[in-house]
Image: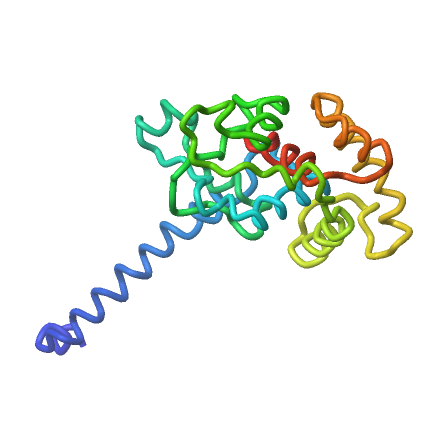
Length: 221
């Protein structure tokens, strides 16, 4: 059998490729599966953070900001530890991005505060002179869709097994029971902000987009 294979270069090459490919899969797949598991201590996004992620997508922040720090010294010196695959275990979709008109944001929660984000989103050039980023003042009056964010949490729990608690159920009653937790989280952020309209909206039971977005950005660490 092997003599026949040696006399047929094409089939010999195919056989070598199959053996190497199989060995490669045996070696690589288990390690890849391990690396893609959630890193220790990683928690799913809260409902408010999910709502902020939707604001991030809606206003196309991904067009100018990446969320993927590569293992190069020039990047880790500027942005912090390089990104690990297990850190994205609860991201659907991933927001890695492919362009950096602005800085990478994967560790932005480590070095920017709520107050900084408020000032920056209202008037970027007041915080970063020469910035070409547009102002996002509409986020201070637009109301975030936190009910849809709750529905997303329930969906990924049931479809992907994301570890949300038993209180996350597909019912209006479950949402109403969870809503006070979202508002409490929003109030903690609004308390660190200056804008009186934002504070008043949260006190009235509504969550401006800026509050949800800041919750999401503060999560990125």
